Every structure is written in C-alpha cells, then in structure tokens.
Length: 253
Image 1 (cartoon, one colour):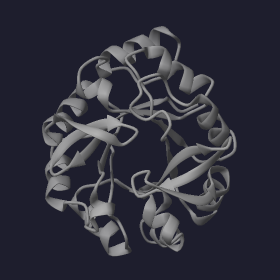
Image 2 (spheres, one colour):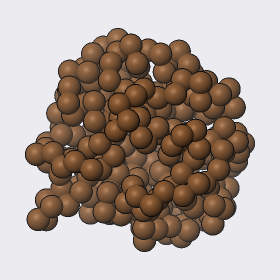
Image 3 (tube, rainbow, N blue to C red):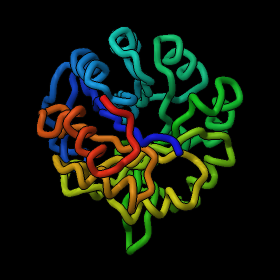
Image 4 (cartoon, rainbow, N blue to C red):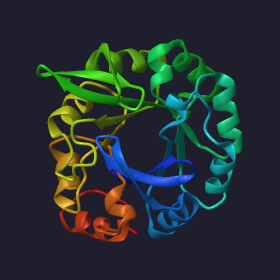
C-alpha cells in the first residue's frame, strides 16, 4: 500500500498566495516562493501551485513564478491555471513543473487530456475536478467554480481515466475554505469508483481527524490544504506526527 500524501496548495493571484471561502473573499497568505521553500523543508510530500485567475483573465500561468518556485522545492510540483494547449503544458514542464493540472480546458477539450498523456506520460497529467451539489447530485463546475456544467462528477472521472489522466485532484466547492472537514461523501464516491489516485481538497481545518477521516472513510490517496498551513494553525510536521500516532500510513517528517 502506498503511503498517504500531504500536499500544501498555493492559490496564487497577482503573484501572491491568497485564500478565501468557496473561492471568494480572498485574503493575502504570503509569498509563494517563500511558502514553497518552507513546505519543502518541512516534509510536505508534494506541492500544488494554482494560478486561480489565469483562466478567467484569459491568460497563461506566469512562467517566471513557476521557475522561481521550482528552484526552491525538492518534491513533486504540480501547476495549474490558464493551460489551454500542449504548448502551454510543455512550457510549464520545461519551467520546472513535474505535473500539470487541467480543469476548465479539459472540460472544454477532453482530447487535450489524451494528447498530453500521449506526449508527456499519464504521470504528468492531473485532472482537477471541482464538484458541487445540485439537487443531491454532484456536478462538475468550471471557471474557478463560477460555471456549472452538465457533467456529473463520476461520469467525468470515468471519461478522463479512459483518456489517460494519471490522477484526480478533487475539490468540493461546497466545503472549500470552510475548515469544517473534507466532503467525505464526495471523496469516497469518487475514490471507490476509479482506479486513479485521488487527491482530496476543500474543507480541511486545524484538526488532524479531518485528514485521518478523508484517508479512511473517504479512501483518498492524498489530502490537500491551504489555510491551515499558510497561517500556521496546523503545520505540516505537526499534522504528520498526529497522523502517525493515529496509525495512518504516512511518510514521516
């Protein structure tokens, strides 16, 4: 069995790390390069960098920022935001990213997932699935959670798996930023119906039980969080030590 992974997320807007609730009311959380260095040194297993306004702004992810972060980290580094083409993916990988995260572009053009997997390998292709409940069903939302699609989450996950995606970054839009715990129903539903590794995102608070629960009840392979790490309410080393005490199979600091 693979060890569970702890992944800090850097949501970046205008060159600064920000965090909000349900993708709104953003507040400054620190310099992304400094935070990346800190998390790498603290024993985070991976790092995710999301340029959260690139898609809605109609621009590409800032390569300079990606290069600066990549020079500071010695752990796998995933980048997302504003990716629309194979050339965009190639540029990010050359800038130092280990993986790319496709969300809105994948929904608009699913063939991009297959093409990227074919050219760069499935291990480089993460499909970010932003999910929200509507009348008791989970649907995919895009454009930083602003636009509902007609795609049901399980159908979309099955489709991208068949196209060659290597991993799912699953974010609960309902739980995002609330710090009340991950959406265990959503996470378990997806984790138990795909062969792909699932990164759970959205809702982590400063309680190690939130992570233990998403790894057990939610069957997630990794857990992603932002605020609790950025603002120091539950540092990565403290979280890992608590999870080890709870018997979670996780890489020690």
